[in-house]
Length: 266
Image (cartoon, rainbow, N blue to C red; front, side, top):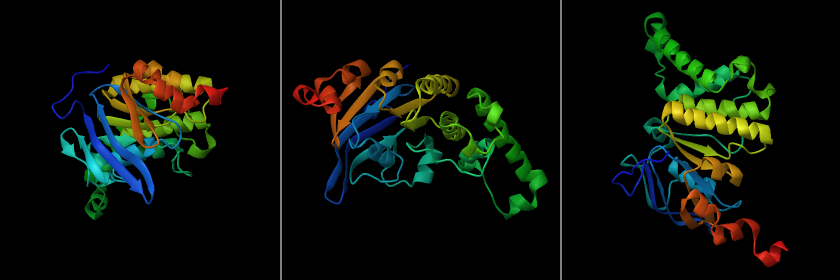
């Protein structure tokens, strides 16, 4: 899946020497990461390793205090989250963050907000102006509903459908933003084996259909080794290793970070 790298250090997204501190806690320390165009790049590590802090830095929620983040040659350090979304980066969240009281269709449509141009003139001239835009957005959303096989629940209130389907809706909402880089924060958390298999298939289908580059945070190492090309492993805010996924997950320091020392495990 992975393709050639760009001049900027090797990828569509390049992080150099990223550091972030919260009070006395060093959440990230001198992290470097290269994500190549078209690949699925894993981000692994035990709880508290700094994975979500790193993607919050990439998406502008907690900008790095040191280091640089570049996306397609654009410096992201001081860019606001909504502008980063418009540049072509979308994400899902570890905890489902859907809008209760709204249908599946309307939740997915919210992913199109970066393309919408609301205003008094658009409302005044709805039939000539805004209606055409609304039809186009709904057409795009219907394509994604078909891709992720959500037709049977498209009109259901999102809070009444099972967790596995809610996770699929959140993926659909992120895809509605037409990203070039999709960040998935533990998309399989809380799922059973069958639901995990479904979401893996839909992630791969979406990558192929939409020519996506994906950054995947995931604790299920079987999933990481099955679909990722490369991976970065973190522990206590520091990088352990980055490289081909099998080399990373079998690295002795990564095994220790997850399982502890052999004596402790015993």
